[in-house]
Image (tube, rainbow, N blue to C red; front, side, top):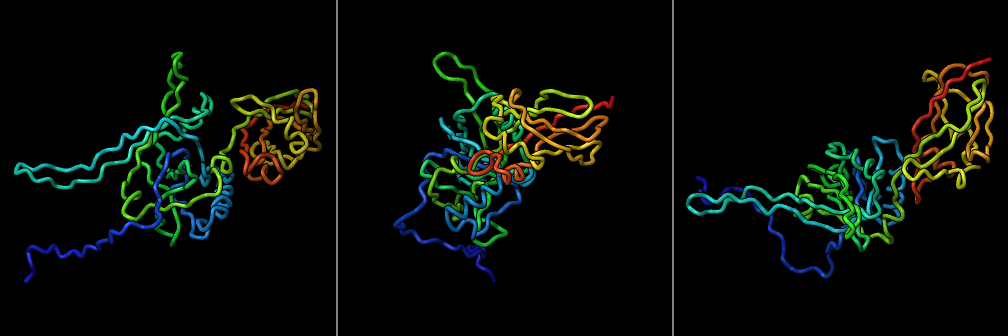
Length: 319
């Protein structure tokens, strides 16, 4: 017959000695969204170098599998919930659940344009997140599919807030608030950390959006295109003109089918790249090659920002 005072569940109690060294998180200053299914392996978490190598590869992948770093953070506000208990009518306190971690930060160096890109991640259900502190220690939670690995913390909600007004005593404010879905991922031996040899914000950088701007269109055969950063409007010509003057840097299509330019050249007066097509007719769509392809050509990419372009449509008419 069972003992009614014994619930029958063996509790594995931990030891209580203080270790000689431990992870004591400092100011959280950086974050990186990771695809929900992504888990870093033990080998990728073995050293700072292997971590940087993996993360730098992730930031230039196609959108669905890409890492999205952002930061730095300041003005932290801990809005986390306390542990939730039920108080019975007889005065007993019964554990209900752990309170959720809710953190709010300002984003250093943000502007309205960058904020608009970050706001596309609001209420995301496809991402998890890792963080790094001011001592360059990156941390996430234990992998479930990969022994010895790390994955991002589960997100219940993330909100990149509307910017707040500069009132003459403080600057325009750019804030985000994140609610982590599972407090156990940061506690009970589930938090995984790795000291890095340098600031991740300097080596793991997000992709910068660029626009393709029409220079001159010669309807029978030619088009010159400027490549400018979307928000700063900086023209990439001064940095990458020679590298952009390469057909491998460009994707041209007509009705979804690939078109190969006949030639290409620099147009210094316009700070543009001119592409010549062979007797083109109708609408053509121009874009830069993928971020990883541009990286291979030496146009952006880790440890600097990568680039991703929008498209430019132009219609050619034969005389």
